[in-house]
Length: 193
Image 1 (tube, helix red, strand yellow):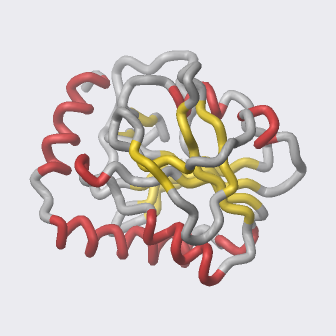
Image 2: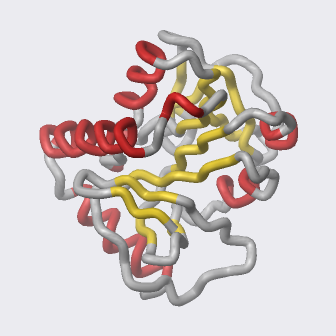
């Protein structure tokens, strides 16, 4: 299938989930993420904050677990006026506001993608997605924010997606600028590519 078809299909499937299903499945995703990806080995974690109205995997559950149990520097994204992601150190309980797409974002100033990756630290980047395939190709919302951010990733970076659904066989219209995933965590399993 092509990206546009996959976006439509998986957004519709997510919107059919109840709040209870989203919460239960998000907890299963969190449990597999923390049990299988050796979270203690990362120095920095970048994690999106969920768009609740789109029934994304509730990454706040992951953020809260990181704050409670892991001594990592936790960053969340914010889209700047120039449509470029900035990366904000996110302390427990930090204030957020919704942007024009309904994404919760921090209020404070962040760092550029280049500055975020300018380190020898082991970094985990948790990205949102609508669909993915068995080759680790991701379908996001189509704005390219994460692909531009991940252009600067180093060999010490692990890129992981979260999904309620299993992998598609193949995304037909991949582009050279698409950055592949290393893992996708679902409620049932962890895919590694």
